[in-house]
Image (spheres, rainbow, N blue to C red):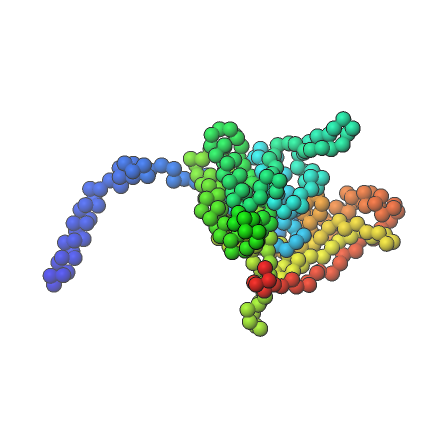
Length: 357
């Protein structure tokens, strides 16, 4: 009985204290009454074909987005579509190319505004435009990439770079950490540790903080993530797609798009053929939204990637694309008529044991 009375008295005292307590005043005294609102979500739009299959407008601004999959499955196509849109929106594309497969002609073909710098003889000697480009000439380690991203954001805060920044990194898993370079050994555990420390603890947090109303700019990180396929752990198990560079970026990413299949590319080529010559003008690939903490939409479907971006995997869209480029293909094939051939899907598995990497 005494315990019940004590408990009731304690609750009454607590209620009395709370009735006289001004929480807003307390938060104000601690500076906790402001900067709690996030900006309305905006998107970097991708092609109508991507939007149709993915069910989302494109790439979410102010977030970490991963584009992952095996080689030649559509990751770079998505990256370039996003870069072109970001540039058209007035954001500044920042290309971080550590895999060294970049092609300026392809970027321009996709719609990126690029100015050719030529010498007196008309030879192209450089490229310039409303973008920033860096590669392995200046960035040698994971730590270099992180420091570069942080430096640009610091310059932005100082007022020296008045743009929303859209970072495009191609790719995670293509560059070692400082210790791997120092020891002359590309150690996966060291690299994963560096990704966790440099990005998980620093860069990624700075990107998502730009979503706050208190930030004058909104920054976005879109990264291609190389993958490998782990063998099934048991006879009845299934192989797993694993991200190179560890899992830090997967955990921090709010939006992940996977291209191709788990254990292989899963693509099929679409070609124009005449005699013994052919032009590969498209490739059918699978597209899946594997993670979406922005609006929850998840979807899966097939899409066709071309040199000019994605198109829908329908006869109507493929025939329209064929009409637009038939003359170009005909010239390459020596003139005259040609036929369109679609290869079967490549399902050759590419499996690794962990110790093989």
